[in-house]
Image 1 (spheres, one colour):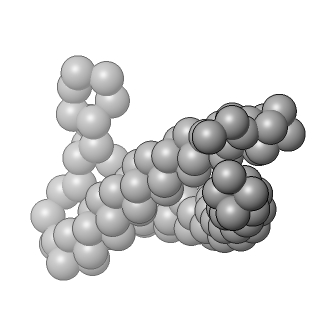
Image 2: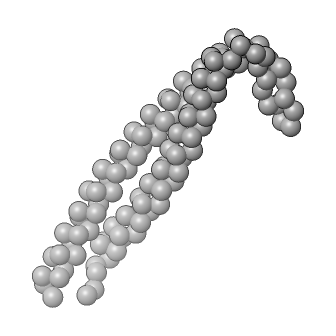
Length: 115
């Protein structure tokens, strides 16, 4: 079965979209993990009555509980915002992928019926 040039280009475009989707999903997973770590840190800080330390490079430094809570809350907000943006990208990419996939399948079906 010979596939015309336009359909081959659509197939290549589909492969590029799929690679883009993989990258978006990897970013999403990384942000989700970082958000979970941040939320866990906030939870542990809230439970703690002891001194709070944070890692700076290779050393741990005593830090103010309120200050670190503020930093982590800002980080949590930023990560949540980035995650929403990535989820929006994922949704748009999924729609484009499905539309293109339908087009390619329609072309292939047409070609098979001709043969």
